Length: 275
Image 1 (cartoon, rainbow, N blue to C red):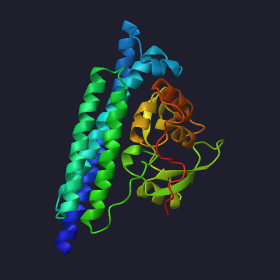
Image 2 (tube, rainbow, N blue to C red):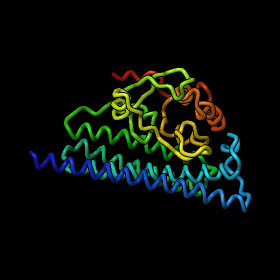
Image 3 (cartoon, one colour):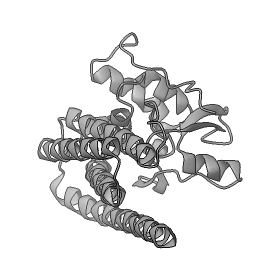
Image 4 (spheres, helix red, strand yellow):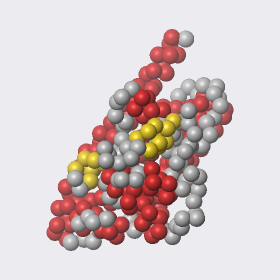
């Protein structure tokens, strides 16, 4: 019994350290990309993605934002692959194994779509398809984790708004992105719920933007990345959850440019009815 528990703790510890290492490397790559891309654009005058230019970014910043999105996407895929490898250890339940196989399928889909997006950066539907596949992989992983310990598989849920890569939400918390904005209830993962409940800061996804290191929701250019994670849910409601942020202002324009309309909505993420 104790040997089994020690082995499980060791696997979990290794998985955590691997994910942490992936995140650290991603941040370092982001910084290097930002500096390198600005240097290249300064000499070449290369045009940037219209989304970023429309958000008030200079050409060098738009190209840098696209480069950093590639790094973020790579980190998301790599981190979920690490979680999948850790989850496979010692799993006996056939239902859990089937869910883990679905995680692997979705990760292959995400990798393919990410490659297509890097090949054709203006084809931003590949970016949303990649993060949509990652969101689906996260839901399958959540089901596998429950089945592996004899619990019922959880129902589908929107991702954690603090960082969609955390996986499906399990709770709601009251949150305001800035002191001047109104509080609203948002879907969050179990770990972030515990942080907020104990008075600590949530683990908000941080990226490098025009102002340096900052939350993803206050960084131009991350709209399609986020909307992919919320595939199947009302994109306008996602914008409302982020009211008072850069992405909250930017997402409605992204929906329009992708040919979406107010009536073309999925599930409402405004009230997810978590305990």
